[in-house]
Length: 339
Length: 126
Image (tube, rainbow over all chains, first blue to last red; front, side):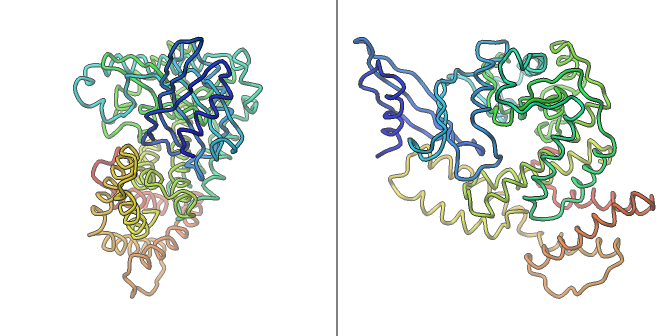
């Protein structure tokens, strides 16, 4: 049975009032190294009327660039739906492998916008950089000031004490490096030693951390508006500066020596502070920016390991380590003031 | 580069062959071949000077670490294995230097910066 037919059969169990359910134009979206992502059109009849909707399927792959819990991703999206943080509507989460071989979720597609960073340096997007940056770090500030308890996320995400945020995250990603590195990483190991010797102060309060908030993980238009924040698979509770530091990781400068390839670090931080109502302590932000160089390298190394072990031989698993591993080392050197 | 270039090229040859089949959905084919093209371009850029850069780096590391070893096998796989062995020793040496030898520590940092220059590819974001 085709994947289209299996998706249609699954959705039929979720829409008992619908008839003539059909899935068309199923297409894999490039990227999606942590989940297989497909777009498709769903059509059905309901109370005599023909209806259709553009949907997204996010399915676990055999081996992933990052190991994440799909329920956490699903609930993070759902928590921010119809808030100041634009996200697509989540529809169904399936944690069994029976319907489509691997767990998955289905969401509404936000149509008509772009996510590819390369487009930003072309017309007609270039004039929108200032506005886009304003929106990017304003939305990140909204995530930082959101109350995880009120959002219901403390029931699905592991709780962490403020003074344990840094050690939990650093310990996790160092362990990923220990398990997955296939060659010595002297620069990143030096960065880890510095991070352990110079821990940051604890945050004033625990926040929702998106975990991968960067140019490329949101949908934008030509006017600099953001219509959807995507890829919440690494969302967790922690220090809000973690997300800000990831957004300032120099590998996301796209060679333009600007935060996210858009504006200066100082401007990005000031927008975030105004939006979040928080103060980004420079020393703490430096720690989290360097930490994110370690985290980035762990992700690129894991991607290489998944390919080498044969769990996932997709070309997308090779591209990050080849394109970004040396750049991530240079980013760490730059953050440490050695480049 | 990891995964090894030779292993990736072999895998890509199979991928290209599979995508020559007429029943591959166009969107899947476009995705697979687009990334394949990018990877082939990256492999081609490293091909010519891969061995040269590894020899230079391994010699620099031996000098820094005061070690000698046989240099007779110039296959890239052998040079990479030697490079990994030396860089593992460099990490240990770096830890010791941080505690007691600022001069050596500075020399190690200089070598680490140089190592990223050797690996620099066109279009690198940093």
